[in-house]
Image (cartoon, rainbow, N blue to C red; front, side):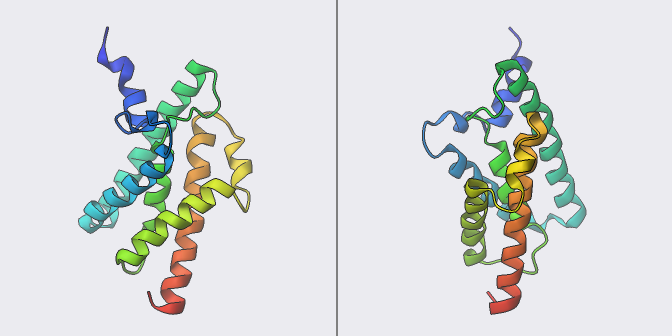
Length: 154
């Protein structure tokens, strides 16, 4: 049996972390922030390219998995939390430990409670619904962080 068959699950579960019974989504978000921390200095174009590749692969693979399992949003897929938390940090004016921690908190709150139309995006289903609701949660988190950075000079 070919390993290629397992690549979508390996990628979408972040090498199996998504199969942890509790907290997998939060771990995925934390890993997204940690990954961002290590590649943040790569420059605008490379940072955006990495983000886009993860998003596209995540949509393709999660769509394939959700169709194969006849499950709209399998629990073990946490690449969406990874990229959503990553999105919450994109292109902010500056970074520090408080911003990284708030990014995780704001993202997880937006992802959990799905305000401002996030739930509607999730209802798209398949790879689009799985990934884009978390991208939108990340965008809202990014906006909140920008307001805090500019408003209270974090």
